[in-house]
Image (cartoon, rainbow, N blue to C red; front, side):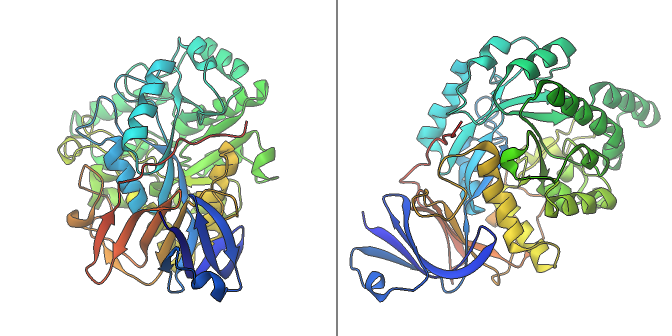
Amino acid sequence: MKHTLIINGTLVNEGVIFKADILIQDGKISSIDRSNSPTLRNREDLRIINANHQYIFPGVIDDQVHFREPGLTHKADIHSESRSAVAGGVTSFMEMPNTVPNTLTQELLEDKYKIAARNSLANYSFFMGASNNNLDEVLRTDPKSVCGVKVFMGSSTGNMLVDNDESLSQLFSECKMLIATHCEDEATIKANCDQYRKRYGDNVPMSAHPLIRSEEACYLSSSKAVQLATKHDTRLHVLHISTQRELELFSAQGPISSKRITSEACIHHLWFSDEDYDSKGSLIKWNPAVKSKKDRDAILKAVISDVIDVIATDHAPHTIEEKERSYFDAPSGGPLLQHSLVTMLELYKQGNISLETIVDKMSHAPALLFEVEGRGFLREGYSADLVIVDLDRPWMVNKSNITSKCKWSPFEGQQFSSSVTHTLVNGHIAYSHVMPKNHFEFDESVKGHRLSFSR
């Protein structure tokens, strides 16, 4: 197999934008050459990719996805959604445990790794799930080969809701791994559901979603998680912050490596607002809910100011038939992986965020936060996970170019200014967007690798 040389690229890495060639050998970045050496360019043993002065980013690391396998594969599976990942420039993902069965034992956890080893185009890790009564299993988790432990402190699927105070206290005090939490207060949500059901029956409007899964529900649960983590010195990561009020719980002080409590923003909370329910309806029904413009703008500012540490998707496909049901029956979640990076690049085009910050929050910060070994940066010796983007290749999202298995997107009809042209996973060109034919090509001959962690 020939090694690869990417020439004429504009790299965005570690807060700097510069022109360089990248030599890839044996799946790793062998050299980053700013001199554009003709010696390298003339080597016959190299496959040349001409970036044509397009931008090269480290591959995106998404720390929150739901790929639905096992048990819910009519919605999505590890193969289909890893394809969607690389089509969006996502080279590594961390997947959640609320599959069927729930990932509550080490054996079930390893089953998912085996599926990914066979089928995933992207690099992968899977969260161990916590319940009210599986602490012994959680404590068996290997911190060097598993990204973390997921705790649902709010409504979820199956036996995943951890609402027993004693169980939570034990988990936070005894688990030495990173704990990632979904924070919404169940009692508050239930009371709000009862109130809206009395008012509307089963015909609750989708616009009520941020009022049912309210700011108060989010804050009560997030603050409880932060209090527990502070008390027990737990390594806590709070997922999908959706309200301005929650931001007071987090600090911008210090590098990620020194933080014991970190947080995440998701694409839908950075792009949509409650004004979009009238046109999008259940297509933007997520938990926690998309809320007000004030919340959306505050979350973006918190990302830029380092109060929020990473950007992810909470990619969670359902079939369109499921999403078209009435409020209480329509499940929450939707596909976002393919469009996460181009959405952030659209915000860049609008003058709302810099390229350096996008790369930091989507690549560098997840690698540092989870202590991922050898990924998340364009560095010599690191795995060659990278994405080439053309900031001036517009395209419109439609059903014919959606790569997720569910074949719909809340972004249908949206024109993006930028395109992912190539995604390399461990030096392998897993995805390319071919012009002028304007079609997607996947090379599935090489699979992604299991992530490892320097803990």
